[in-house]
Length: 469
Image 1: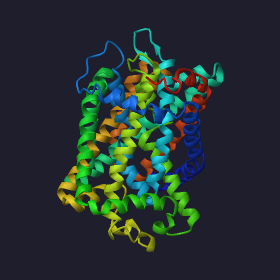
Image 2 (image 1 turned 135 degrees about the vertical axis):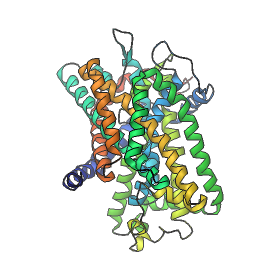
Image 3 (image 1 turned 120 degrees about the vertical axis):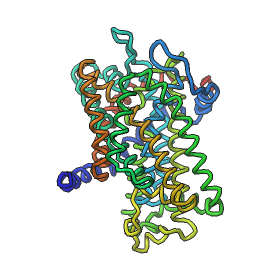
Image 4 (image 1 turned 120 degrees about the horizontal axis):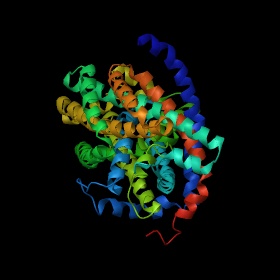
């Protein structure tokens, strides 16, 4: 495994660097800008509509649906996919490599990404189909095929399906289980391989229950896990309240002058901050990646627009709440007030302090709550965040496996995905993250092409200004 890591890692990092530094930024920001203007900035004028739809009828025990999911169950499944290691470990990695300013660029990506995810959800609703056995099926492969008839559309949809199976069903689940294993080993001394076995067993039980069992789990798990994590983060911020203004200022200041804290040239530092913000921003909110439309396609709503508004709430919660709380906790404890990472630009590297993306959050929380409480809190939070992501990602991969090979291939896919979950806990995290990033970014390409191909349909389904209700 070490040989594979040494051989493969540099090549994957080089490809990822090109994609994230150039292709990904252009595609994500460009697509978000395009749909922001095309929909009249729907993320501003219709976010309240989405918030009212979600929190006005919030329930942890929705009624069993005859088919598909309730709107809230679809959102919970989508948030389960969005709120995972990208919101904790990913945010830590972005700050360590791109400085506190990388969070600003994650916000930018998320703001425009809300328009993108609105378009994805609307199209997933409009182009979904019902199979011969009454199952609702939807997602990017269907709106790609709707946008491009013939061989090109079929090839593009096939490329997306393969990419998402590898990105989320296999390598993505490895990232999630890797983070859980590392956190539990640090906090409780439990071997990561043992954690992997437990994850595989619980995951297998839920996978075998199908969409209804998964929806039942996510609608209960997501509100509780998000609420507890935000409560813990706010506790730390209250205890370090005098450093919060400084932390907020650092996010904005170092977004445009990251060399002051990263060192090196201004151009290289800014490139690192922007590219890390974009890459981790994608992993944190998944807007434009084409994953969450699979969940939103299953929602039972009156209009595609209704679920589009609800979908935007997922990005709002994942990035503007969970990522922001994570970032502020790290900055107020590790950077502000002469914290241990305040001297990074003077030649000190986080690695010399024994810090890495997988343990930075634990260190930050521990510095205020105490070592035992802080490490345990992050380990448990990561378990719920990452495991709920595994559940949703497995479903997305399963739907695309079924699209490519039919239902007969689903059992084999399920077994393989469980093996990858177990392998993730014993694999070097660097290679796991890079492979996941690679296929995440490859998913963006066909999905964005499909979105642009259906841009007219999105406009037709979006109420004009003043008629969002």
